[in-house]
Length: 134
Image 1 (cartoon, rainbow, N blue to C red):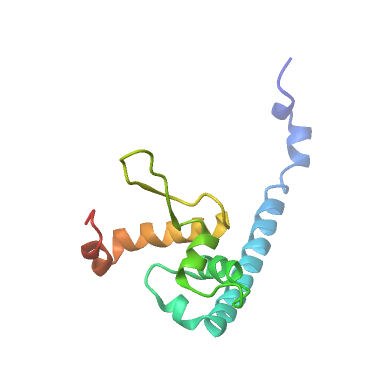
Image 2 (cartoon, rainbow, N blue to C red):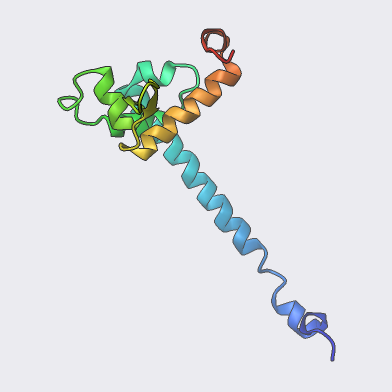
């Protein structure tokens, strides 16, 4: 028995279907572009200094701004580091003196800081020369 798509009467019914996903994709892409431009204007108005930093895009700025949305709770850089899960805490035992990163905090903000660090280590020369791995 031949495959059902090899029969001309069935293939004829589905000739115009590939245009539907393409139209949907174009409509969604237009909506994404509109929302991206709206977010760009919002975050450049709210945190222009943050968006202007090398390696910080609108998406990472948005994650950092929403993590620190209550400025009365964040009194220092150390408080923000703890909120993002990048504050060093002692992990010593016996004679060894070590530190590890705090595991609590906003994982999205931690992810944003990680992406900023990776981009800056790859593309921003002052960051590359200031890092111990550079």
